Length: 384
Image (cartoon, rainbow, N blue to C red; front, side, top):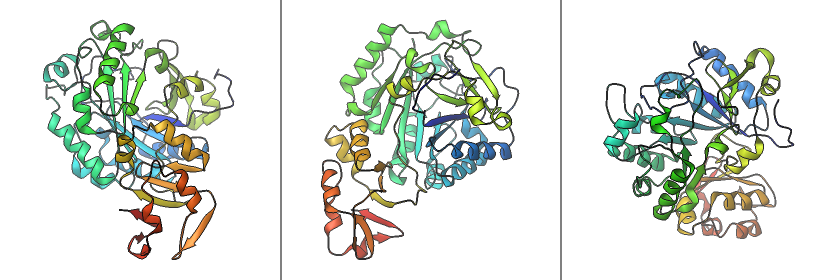
């Protein structure tokens, strides 16, 4: 049964497909017991079910490799965004390019790229390459990162620490990519998924800790780093497999629920184990908002991330401040849903006292310039 708590996990990882064009030896998302994914119509219905749970705010589309689905993935991201969910895609990045990011940027809030090494030999040894041996290039990663920054998609990096890369200092390359979040996982054994190759991959707790400390010594902004040990990974996610069932990894292998569409969200959820405490401990409770949220004033803040990094302010600290005044941070945006408000040139903007509370984080002088008409777009005020 699910652990008793008054809180809820606010993010769902939806594993759309089991296939992948890479052959990572440590991968625990092969879904060897899943025969096939559900049809597109049923995937859209699943999104409707998820969005109906008012405490679920974010959906992360994963695989396998979700970009193998081509246009279907893009359509699902758009649909989830229109349903009001914060959208995220986790990918190895090999099948997408700048054009893909540009065309999906109005609907995708977070792009997570899995990068374990900046070294060809390490990627080859770990299987972080195509099954015919085509390796990822650093130039391609940099192009994707640059496109995210250009088109307003929050960039996140996932790194899995294994025996292959445990001595590397990846932070120097991460600094070039400039992500808003860098999650560092300890390679996790999952029975029935990756145990055949796991002895080649496994790192001790001490080796993992040493790797994380090395990155923290070199990364430009320590606040972006999220450390996730094996213990924190187990049972701290709400995950849906390609057949439309919840599954959890709290007991070493996968425990699977009945199909959500057949028995309902809450009943299926009650059939797996999960820990809200672990979810919070691994800093899972973060939200960058939804680009299609029209519930409040949408204020683009081009300089927000830069200023946040310059001042070494953590996401947790920002979110705490915003929560205290009923605001949510949406990547390069603030969605202001509270009062007091004042009217100026027919635009609702926060009262000056509210803005003062945000002055440490946000460039606010534009609110008080005289010619707001030049800044106005559809329901937006653009900070220059």
